[in-house]
Image 1 (tube, rainbow, N blue to C red):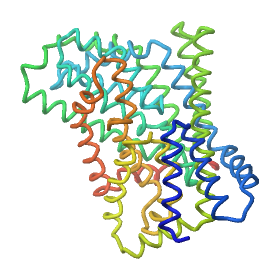
Image 2: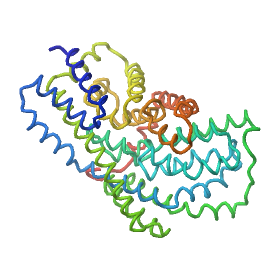
Image 3: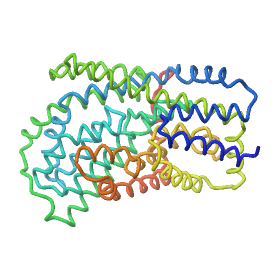
Image 4: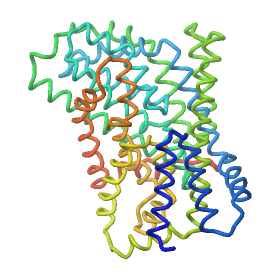
Length: 436
């Protein structure tokens, strides 16, 4: 059977299973099982057992539940209130004023949580009612939160980068460090847009009192422990003191101490944070197991190699390939969440990018940016659903006000292509401990 019909069988089986409401991880396992039974002679059961154990026993994957737990712990503290109260005085003189608290707040929380949804929820539960009360435009409140919430996928620790690194056997530590500068640049783009918009629509932005420096510092004191925690986790990775997994362990301990100091570490909060981390980790682990088995099944059929050879025969330049993959992932992101998109496609895409000579660290950051776009594109954009529950608006409205931030992410892809050093400079200069 030629590659075209192999592809048709895989895709039809996948969309049939997904369309019936089967979990993504189980759908991937089902597609792989069909492929193994129909197109190979190897016993599918033995292959599945071996592959699932290998993919789920990776030491690098240990960082995943730890970073998730770290974010879950801090999600249950007063962090959202502290962030708004601490950041607001510093934003009052900027064009756009307190709209920037959504962006800067998401950037800060993204550095302690690899989840986009958790970032939106934590920042939004305090900023939305407060900005509404002060009279800021609704479309900018919702739009900035939807766009900036995606930074949870870019700023380390990023769950998507962990999954990508495990899938293609790339250093998690280097991927984390690579995400710092692009994340800051993308946040700057968002703030720049808000500033320009506010200068054009001066009457739409309410005035804010300007506090003296001493008062600003006093209000920001509760943010200092969180910033020290972020600096400790990322600094230990960059300077080679710890691997990503070890840094995640330090982060969990720091988050527990921070929650305890605020009086938020009750038995209920501890249990809820632990079970929340277990649920999210188990979901991602199931997806990774299914993707690993699917990659094995596709490898036996020769499909990834054939597609890579077909792409190579087209003699696309690396830039043309990146442009094609950008469109591909934007379309795919309309139907699948980010992690599913990554693990589902890597078996085919990895040979393409290696053949084209594209740096895998750089590509990890690129893929996070295009997956970020999927968070705010209907019908499956996860941030849209989160914000629908928080604001009461229809998904179409939230998607519409998010368009400027979607376009800024497209601009970020262009900037990454033009200046690849944004993603590669810090990883090239970092010290790394063995196994990191």
